[in-house]
Length: 320
Image (cartoon, rainbow, N blue to C red):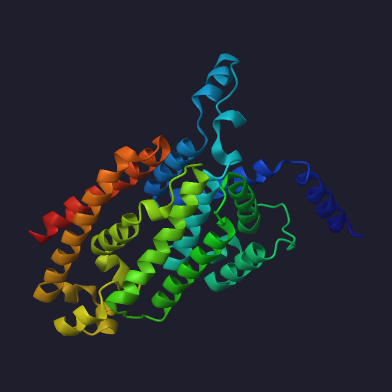
């Protein structure tokens, strides 16, 4: 054995002395650094919110404070649970699919390569995952915690598998510059948001499931699409239905190369107003459900709805 091999072996043995939580927290923090670098503080705020809702307990917090223990005590952090790692891992996955985050940052040549590795682990429990600072290990850690949190009838592995399928569809839509019909866009929104929200609800240890708040998928899909039409088009993601572009006499490929073609088009403007009205209706319907939900889901949805409402107001000003 060479000196280099000996030192590497010693390093790896020393790493294994640390807990799973040590690795999970460090991977989590690595992702946070990536988001800080990209100035995506909104993601970190959401991450902190789900972390709070998923792991904060006043009954646990009180003795921790009285004993003078540091804030990083396990009783106060949901890194030891599933909410925070599930959110950050899901956020990173979505960003890789959208082209906002290079998979090479995490050691993958492409997004499909990452999905293949993740699905192999999800579907085959016997796949060996090395304890290291990788997304593979964070997924293992997250799934194990989610399985402890899930209730009878839940299947977090299947949910995560389907979430990856949805992200892969979004990835291929972008790289292949696809322009899709209204029905296909609706299906993409349903799949992209439904499994992600169901996973988060399980991580929050709530009895509520996506089927109880299903309006959130189309609400976010419609409003997010309207709020980011031009930036998404610049990334070759077209969220305007094929039927609308045909009526507006705009070529999809040409539009993705020049998003300013939207300006002044009355067909596009009418479609945006219709989508905004449908989104506002979904928003109102979902908001009426919030008072009847449990505390954690109230907090989760209230935070998400505040972000949606802010976007709605900006779009309304834009369309005046």
